[in-house]
Amino acid sequence: MRFLIKFSYDGTNYNGFQYQKGLPSIQESLELALKKVNNNIKTNVVATGRTDKGVHALCQYAHVDININITEQKLKRALNSNLPKDIHVIETKIVVENFHARYNVKSKEYKYYINVGEYNPLERNYVFQYNHELNVDNMKEAIKYFVGTHDFRAFVTENKEKENCVRTIFSAGIEEKDEKIIITFHGDGFLRYQVRNMVGILIRVGENKISTTSVEKILLSKDRRKSGKTAPPQGLYLTNVTY
Amino acid sequence: MRFLIKFSYDGTNYNGFQYQKGLPSIQESLELALKKVNNNIKTNVVATGRTDKGVHALCQYAHVDININITEQKLKRALNSNLPKDIHVIETKIVVENFHARYNVKSKEYKYYINVGEYNPLERNYVFQYNHELNVDNMKEAIKYFVGTHDFRAFVTENKEKENCVRTIFSAGIEEKDEKIIITFHGDGFLRYQVRNMVGILIRVGENKISTTSVEKILLSKDRRKSGKTAPPQGLYLTNVTY
Image (cartoon, rainbow over the protein chains, first blue to last red):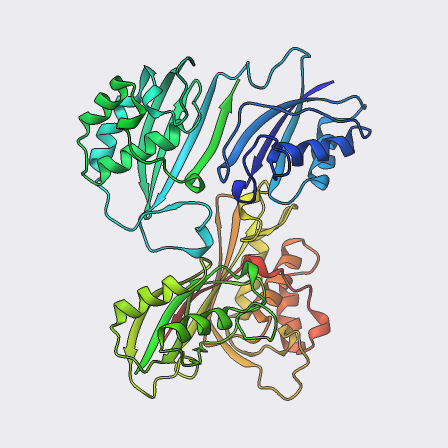
């Protein structure tokens, strides 16, 4: 039986979602818990996609095939009692056998948190602490250039000469709440480091180091060398996925 | 020169505020940082009071005597660059030589966070996760009995036959925000475990296991055996201190 699992995790103590030999990963922890529940059979987890080291997820999905007869509610409970405390299954749902957690994704939402207020030690792994002023009005102007269908090659860290880097961002926005700047991207999919690189360039705009219109120029240049620093992982959250 | 230091910390990885040989403490970390700043001289930290293992502080104070010539702003920076990331100096202020961080305290505020929504792995060390329903209206009724000047002996975990357990709670309240219940106590001082024991009994009221009026009876009984479980430390925050 195929189940779709909705889960959340604190990425702080993991080397990312994907299994890597000898390093802690969300995938490995999930597969170990699933194996215990699924009659000791190695059970593959197919997620919507990866998240990198230190990145969090409040809403992530994966499909798994389970051989035993178990209800949705009981599978949730069984998994949570076998998972470490920094990974949590929110919901499980029986789906059709050809449902695919990655191929069937319609959209994903990411949020990036920047704290411009006093450093809070309780949030050290959950926000990007930024101790200088940011021109948020300019950042709000600049983020508009990302909306639409573009070749995002300039915002991909790895050299992906042959890869298709065309993606669509349905909406993007910036809100200020307390002393945090929250940047949201909603799109059909994101390339590796794309969100953190887009945030990196928005920070340069906020620092008044580049103009708002240079964001469009960098996007059109398709040249990674033109864009700024990759924003650190702890501010990034996968916040929603739709099917 | 005497400085009053305002600081915050994540209590998760500490055995409490107070120095204990061979165990990590906030005090030890602060004194190590101070020693580095203060010409390698062992420097005593006198805080408003202790917090227990796993308890957090968003606003805690301590006074220290520093021999070197340093400005308030520079002392803040020097300390933060020598402190671990889970302790943070918010402000430092030069005070008169007889100012005492403990004796001069006028009031303290503690907040206790209970999450009654879905478990969030990112908050596992920062709220008490409670997976059943709580009757918050009854809890709001019951908390009123704590306000005023009382002998809080029934809410102190340790056997303190001879200690003066009379304290004054100026105000106490409960608010609901998103799926969290936030309990606030503001008083002239609190005994060890007092807040967590008061929260423990409020939870029993919320579970409809005891009536709201039994809180008054337990308080008047001065008998610790009559009150409930001590609420876990990770939900507790020292949020304000006034002088």
